Length: 312
Length: 246
Ligand SMILES: Cc1cc2nc3c(=O)[nH]c(=O)nc-3n(C[C@H](O)[C@H](O)[C@H](O)COP(=O)(O)OP(=O)(O)OC[C@H]3O[C@@H](n4cnc5c(N)ncnc54)[C@H](O)[C@@H]3O)c2cc1C
Image (cartoon, rainbow over all chains, first blue to last red; front, side, top):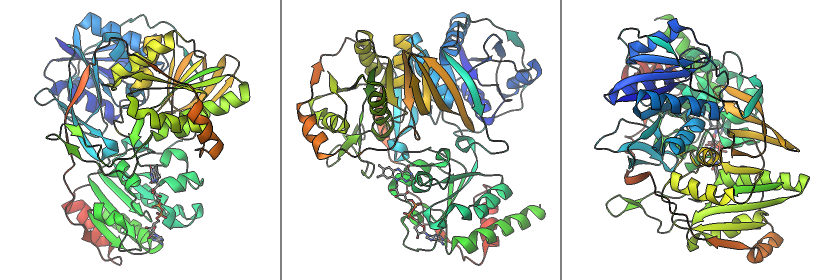
């Protein structure tokens, strides 16, 4: 018996893919990684360090089309006799995981935050306001792991990489163009996030937020009204109706902490709140609070981070 | 153009979440139900805009019991032409998706739209499952959707950016922010919704593959440590030495 893990290797091996391998290893069976695209064998072999026993690659597939990837993963599950398939709960996990669940008639747990305990897998529900424990009734299982739920555990040996042909068929979805802003850290995977809200008064004041983020190596985020009025792009909107994130550190400046905002960020390990209003509801959800004007506090914090980095 | 929009109910975003029966069931007592915001604001409104521009029809579908008719009427008030309710509790995403797919198979829709996830179970599962059951392409997390004849152009979220993709009908799409602006139903819409067709059909024999066994509330936060706004060195020191996050 083995566990199959789908790996997105399009742009190197991101942290969430290493998390997925580590997770699969913890399930206790042989770990087979399957990927598509054109990554180098030497890169893929390093998945062995995190627990993969073997990596399969289907080089005939060069898009993220969910039908093609489903065909390949289903074929690999068949030929490897895998009863469990693991994804990262990213955009591929969210499009291929459900298809594969239907194809294999395998119960799907989307956004797992822990390994199975007593046959139950923990997930976040009600936009992070609660946790649920799900059991799978079918013999076959599909699990997609919420990014940043566990740390990748390396230290092992490289593993063999083999070519695989899963008869992917044709892509129903044709990619015309892709726009990935250079040098920005994608929000869902970021470990550190600096976020700001309506308290910043206008889009021209985001320079200090970006500067702090740059100094920390953090991604930037915002509250919903800020995205709605066009001060910031939509993909930065966090909360119940935006992106749900769970970084190690979430710094929120000029955000009141409405329940819908909290729902998307309360999985953060540590929350720092900067607000002029000592009664702002966000302080109830914060670990560290600063009552003060963001226009003074944020640049001061940036300076303090610079100093800290300079002193090593 | 025939459009099918999948609608789920969800608790109002301000709802306090509690559980009953030894934490095995969501306590609906006092909870106000709304149309799941992703389904309403993005999937339904974009479907209505496409219909207005290209003619055709918008059908909404939900898997639920008679208590959900109120939520269905809300969605009809925004402008859908007719509604279908598959008369069953939605046991899990697989069960729900297979019911909807069974209906869609016999009705030749050009596009099936879902929200990107519900705000209660957040699974992002139903759209992809329907697509697989129908054997059609699936575009997930779309923030833009334009249709020209039988070809659609979409923008979707990928890691750290967006992708522009093209797909032919029929297909399934899950809708995220950016696709449309929320519409507030007017009095005429609310009146008209009362008499629009709501067809109740019985479910197909399908077994759920998963079940929620229990729930827990997250541990409550310990008290917030207040830092002097003049002293950001202290905050950095705490984040490094105490919280160990930088
Ligand atoms: C169905 C629904 C879904 C929603 N989903 C979301 C969601 O996903 N995400 C989301 O964020 N919101 C969401 N909202 C909106 C939410 O209810 C709040 O309105 C919103 O989060 C408030 O944004 P804000 O904190 O930036 O602005 P405000 O509430 O206006 O707060 C601004 C804060 O800045 C502080 N401030 C002002 N000046 C300064 C200064 N100089 N320095 C420091 N602090 C200052 C103020 O004290 C105040 O606390 C949703 C609402 C609804 C009804």
